[in-house]
Image (cartoon, rainbow, N blue to C red; front, side, top):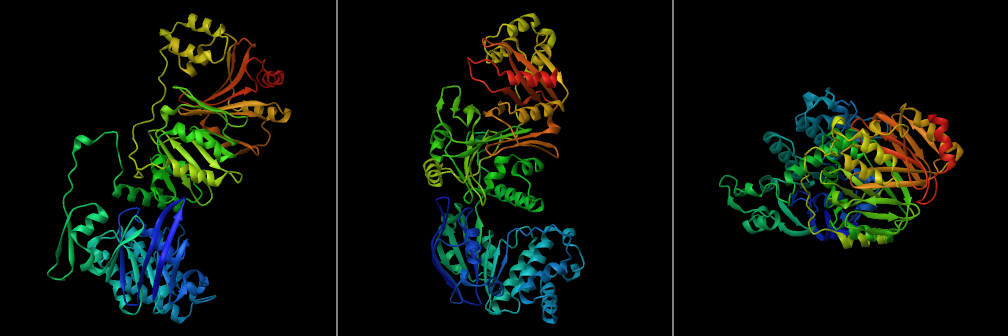
Length: 614
């Protein structure tokens, strides 16, 4: 018998399951129904022992689920997960035999082999036993995994079988066959709980239906008792006719057609459909399982999606959407204490630890002018913000309208976790649905005019007469010159293109001489500046890295198209920089000697430049 008493599960101050109770006996099939985010998968993970309830009790045959030894529990409870990705070239018969691992020590016995044979026969995969699991279709793989979990408890009457969407991806025949198998299993004195999205399959095969809404039990009873027009609308927000199938005498739910006004397309409010979100989540998890260790940005690139789209598959679980009042959110960040700020573009990642201090905003930009974290913020590009609580990291992440990350803030072991929880609670958005991200190409800054149309003499005179390096932006705008174009059109002696690999020697020299530098890394929404020493350098594969305790820089070497030594005049004398560009003429990273306005450039910096680039 399974007894569930007032269980609650919370994460990141969000309650996913609340005060939920029910019980079941051997011989029953219970289907769990609910909209996305209702708490179905979370409940199943609690019942399996994967997630521990904050309150209440889960008793399997009178014993708390978490008090079982793992080997003992494996003989009393089996789980068929929603995603079962196998990356190793196992044979089908070997996969099914894995279900017998709890039953033998070194090698399977005669009974184990008989059980495997029986479950493969029942699931219709015997003819596949010598095939590699990697050569099977998705539906065939699901049937093999079903045979595996059946083998785990086949000779253990009274055991509990938990299944999370076991028929997704199967054709009609195997949807029916799979649920017929588990129903027959229940009749042999087993307990079966399955999450389903298809209401009519639940009506056809379940003895009871447990309806969830917002993490709470909404209805619990036989299909005839709970499947009615009102309950279907309350749970799924759709209108439907509910009739009795005269052949089976069971309810049949026929949703009414949903009509959408096409004039509403391209409005300011875009939400991803439930089906699209589910498909995206399945694709993401499948790829991530097949490519462990890949970062979410790289997975997004491989799937031709944005990072924000993949992140939103965790809404309601590990991800919380924040209100788009990003100025107020950022003003609350100092309460977190010591954090790690991360700003990147396609080819460079700048990570700086410290505290957010001296935060201010103008109508055009924001400033963070702390001793450690130094930022220029352009909030016009910021469209989406999220709080993310994962197994190993906790962060705030911000994205532009195309789902590209503009800035991230990661908690460290020194951060104030209570302040983070308070911040998230204060700025959680009412709308927690996944947004549709524009698939338009990322807009790049406008290219400069053709060289023949530029007032070259005026541009060069303006360059030579600059009093402050910040005047360079106005100079480019005035003459219609792009940044990379300016490198080629500069006055004599003001720019010099150098060999791409030369910059590594320059950074190494700065590290060895302990010359303090300023490292600018940016994107359209944020520029992050590190001021200080660089010490620990490491080139690994395609990345050149600075790996210091409070500052990390990761520069992708294969993204570098050109490197320039640039000289700009100022009232404090000439200011020298090293600027690195990609193939599109976009700035990747920029290096200066550490300085403050009103103070001449460091002589040590100039010596390194002369030594490396003379």
